Image 1 (tube, helix red, strand yellow):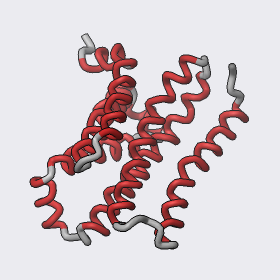
Image 2 (image 1 turned 135 degrees about the horizontal axis):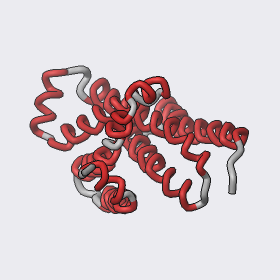
Image 3 (image 1 turned 30 degrees about the vertical axis):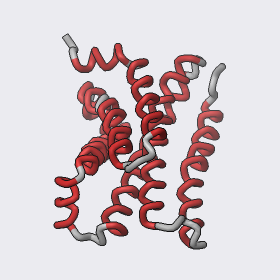
Image 4 (image 1 turned 90 degrees about the vertical axis):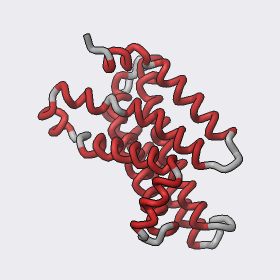
Amino acid sequence: MRLTPRGVFWLKVVLHVVFLLPALYLVALVMTDNAGGDPVQYIIHYTGMGAINSLLATLLISPIAKRFKLAALMQTRRLVGLYVFAYALLHIAAFISLDLLFAWGLLFEEVIKRPYILVGAAALIIVTLLALTSPNKIKRKMGKRWQSLHNWIYVVALLAPIHFYWSVKSEIIEPSIYIVLFVGLLFYRRASIKKWLMPN
């Protein structure tokens, strides 16, 4: 199989639709009072799931491209990765604005009291750095340092499902499935991770 430039263009259009529709659906649910019994927690959870699913999709691109010999598919990684950042930003924004009502002092108390928030914040910081350095112009300027920085996506792939697992009170089956999926994807990349951690 081979993706033509035109095929890549339309694939990106489809991906934009796929990642934007859930956000529009959430807006529709909130506007029609169908966001569950606790809309605030629903929004926080929904955007968090958007971030973790986008992250999963990002890490799936490389294995799929190699399996089906679709090198051009790699051109979609930046697009999907930016949606990880977008949903993660919406997730933290919903938490700070709707749950904490911008009570910054309470935020620091919550971080100390609930370690999963600290784990999520660490993942967000990494994702933010990856998003800010994703443009090709910056990639060229950074040279080899760019790849070293963007390998931190592997750390996010550990932090995100752990954050999810710790944040739930009882239903641990779903976050456990995500942990297994991410561990599987990291195991698939074990050679690249070993090379990154032990370059010599």
